[in-house]
Image (tube, rainbow, N blue to C red; front, side, top):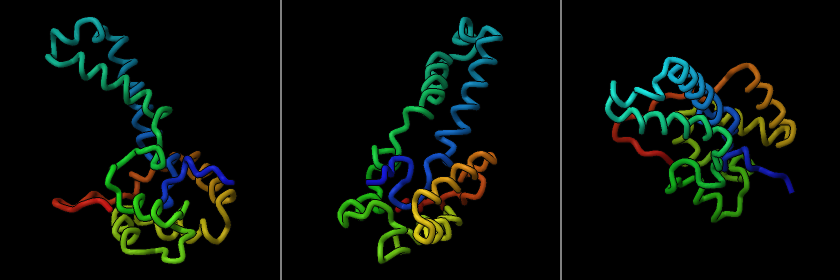
Length: 157
């Protein structure tokens, strides 16, 4: 059986999420700069609450490797897409006969590549699709490059 750990039920590839890529890299760079400049020792005297910030940066650095992914609980615990896929026994929404459904359509309003990527996954298979996504990642692309912000008062799928 194929391991889908790096692919969310909806069809987003975790390797293109800034939580696993850019944020840990940038947090590590900021932590390195702050440590070089001595903030680890005196930051709390200059900025009250710095200790919690420092700890948070450390957690962001580690999160890239520790993120459990969608299947491990990352993201909204009440995600309708995850609940639907689990109830239907569907490993990947793009492989569902109802793809794209209302849940996917709603998420695609934020992630404009989602449906086209899902159609591509279904057409070429997961192994070839994962190779394409890894190549995409090697270019520096992240979903946040094309993602639209959530609308105020809107809810996630």
